[in-house]
Image (cartoon, rainbow, N blue to C red; front, side, top):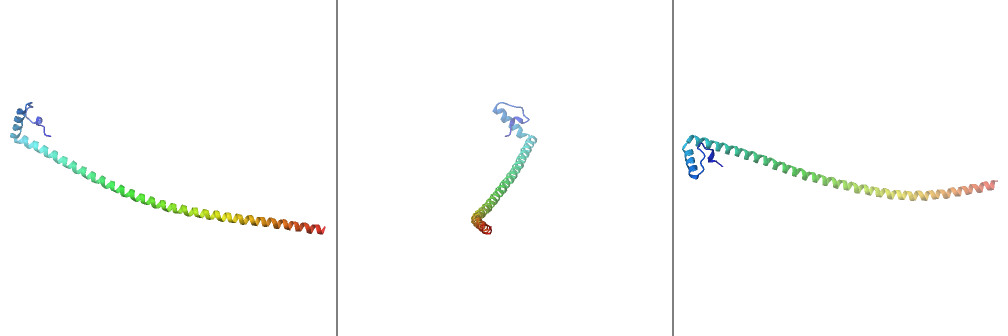
Length: 136
């Protein structure tokens, strides 16, 4: 806002006095031209600031979009990694289950063979004992 109190004319409190000061200001072409130059410089400076602010806002928007795209790519990669990991876990769980089944089968076979070996050992000892008894 242009203040009429900053003019070269003395400060006047009533409306008529201000009107007179304004007329005096406009009649002084040098003061009027200087004031218009100041206003133009202020306008140019404001326009430059607005342009810089627009550039900064555009850069921020570009960065926000880049971050959004990176986040989407990262989330997609996480989902793919998680799916791969879940698949590996399921595969390993199946391998463990198969191993447990094989171990149980081998333990049962080992137990049966151990029992058969114990029976044969007892039978052989009995035979050896009979042979020793018969030889004595």
